[in-house]
Length: 247
Ligand code: F6R
Image (cartoon, rainbow, N blue to C red; front, side, top):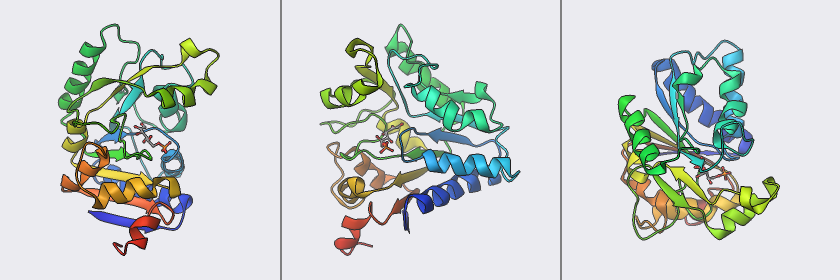
């Protein structure tokens, strides 16, 4: 495992973008596993900037995203498809037909999950999976649990997540109650993992994930079993690890 300890959000964004850019330069038809959330926004901004400067070409790149809310269409501004379009895809020369986000509107969600696994397999697997981390150690929508869920599956969102999301919707019944997420096996199958973390709110989860026992109670702890993980984290996110003398 490589841990890049950087100063702040800006440096994290630049370093993480550099790790992904290095792959795109060395393998122009790379399959990127992508994530949403606030952590990678700056990193996506850097990739856009370097594309606009002429340093990156995404014309042969494909992508698969980790997760999507069930019940939201891609043009809903709360959907993860919308997030990816507006933060990255609309600003680079990636072929949108080669970008995949789970279908939140599928009538048969179980079938949609199976199809998503099949899409990942048919692409030849993921070269680099980008991950943010939840304050509780979640990755994708794989929340702390008694078991590691293997492949793409439907999850019930916790009451606190539903309430936290409520402010973005006009009424409570529009707030998604479920999501579709890649499972732990899908994530672990990626040839390389790029984990990004910023801020003190991630310090405990990062310490437990990288140095604690491997347990589904801290889903990201499974990454200790992956043979090619790059972590890019800022001082605040690494504060507990440093305090314990582990870095
Ligand atoms: C996003 C995702 C989530 C986030 C995590 C951290 O696709 O799967 O696991 O990576 O919740 O979110 P932020 O970056 O907003 O702190």
